[in-house]
Length: 294
Image 1 (cartoon, helix red, strand yellow):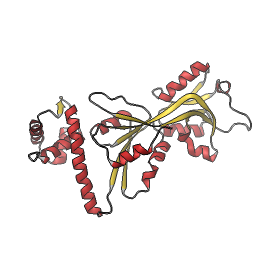
Image 2 (cartoon, rainbow, N blue to C red):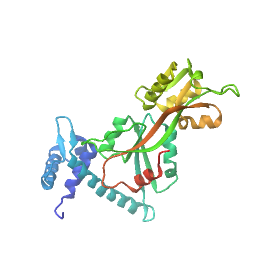
Image 3 (cartoon, rainbow, N blue to C red):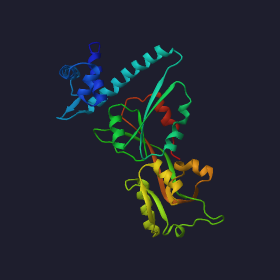
């Protein structure tokens, strides 16, 4: 290993994280041809291809993903070293890069990450987007973990680790009802106007099955993928919203909304998705250890 060229490894690491030869060459300030040649030299030294090359993109091979894992650790430690030198030995800054799927409750995310907010040595980077976008960033190690309300299935090219970190009951929530008037299922749900998660949501699928089994017919007021918008509509529309309490925890605490009932057998699951690595950063380990289904 004394002959390993760490400049070649750095070039490979940059291309893998950028996902594109042109952008990597611009960042490294070298020509594309020189960059491509040095990556091929690294492949020759390691004896196996690191990328599958197509006309439009570079995809890591399974072996390339393993090499990237080690390179990420090597250069990540180098960045941590420089942060330590700049900030002093007693101020080791740790960065946690979290991808949050746009359909996930912001309240759930804040509750999960709150223990890290007040730690001066922790720097959080939060990115939001579709599940596909977050997984693409995770694949090239631009994220440490993705928080999602939808599970993913690993395969040979993307060996995800998908961990269930929480499970919450789904409720019917709406404006104040007359006092002492208990909401009874299924009768009181019949014909009511409802705000529902979008058709691709696992909660929506479970709710549709519950309606079918209970023979409940409802009026659809709106279907919304974004939890922040669903929260606003639940607060302002007067319709009944189908969601976990965490989405509207502040409105419930303030009395602006009320929980009518828990929907039997309907739950929202929350997952932490990580890429396959020989080890995770201490912050990722701490986050996953502190989260447990419940």
